[in-house]
Length: 340
Ligand SMILES: NC(=O)c1ccc[n+]([C@@H]2O[C@H](COP(=O)([O-])OP(=O)(O)OC[C@H]3O[C@@H](n4cnc5c(N)ncnc54)[C@H](O)[C@@H]3O)[C@@H](O)[C@H]2O)c1
Image (cartoon, rainbow, N blue to C red; front, side, top):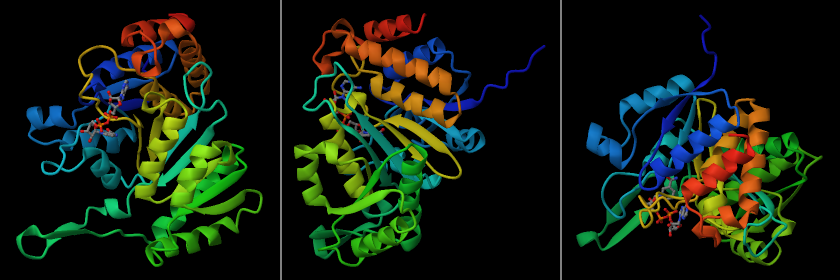
């Protein structure tokens, strides 16, 4: 009897459109010949119902054991309610690097055809450290504390420059607001410049975040790799997703020494959940990043070819990309290109 050596991936199907796009991506992974087995685990709203906990111990144990997870989007209540499970998972496993590639795909309607930007966002510090409280009588004010450390800044900037080297990128742009936030952002910039000096083969510049927004919209081709802190990275990566056709085609990887979680940049899209019309491309591109992470380069390349062909075919395009196709039609088309 042969024993399977396929790596085990913790699978979180997610909330809202999560189950629909996860199903589609599982079909695509099968079609591209990926050698994987899955351990399905609960998280988010569904887990709150089934386990009375949006981030159950069984899920944490599975990710800790297998070290790789594919995650559908998870809903977070606005204002009150439980804390974001997405943020909590990143902090629990110290997934300090959030890597978000944005590429113009032929056939996908967008303002530009020449965007190829990878945002490397620090994922554990800054205003997302979760230090918030009300001050003053009667909740008359509230404050959130942004924590930036020398350690956290150094490892994310080093990650960005190492990434640039590994993937043949030419330039890293350091995005900050050190002119106003002189201590927190000043520390980030100071450390970033020190690290940049160790990589003479990679060009670098630093850009103030507001100017970066304008330049990204006017001349996105001037950017290659971006490295920035958590809040700016969160906002900028959605802006950049908008330059290549939107959240439907934007994947993300959360990486650290202890685990890697791959996901779509978009959320659970409750407005279209259950209708079978969600675009599974972002989660599929995240699955491609996962295959590369696992060293399964041929299935990754097949998956990308299938997705490129699917996106280029107007009959297969989903509504968010201006088409009429639904999740199943798109998935059938992509799998057919891969011979299934
Ligand atoms: N990483 C994550 O899991 C993650 C990220 C962002 C938001 N969220 C959560 O998701 C929930 C909804 O957030 P939101 O509405 O602000 O953002 P969203 O990304 O879910 O949706 C924004 C818009 O984009 C559309 N959209 C998103 N993904 C799509 C897809 N694959 N195909 C077609 N259309 C798509 C939606 O229909 C909606 O109109 C919230 O609870 C939020 O906290 C989770």
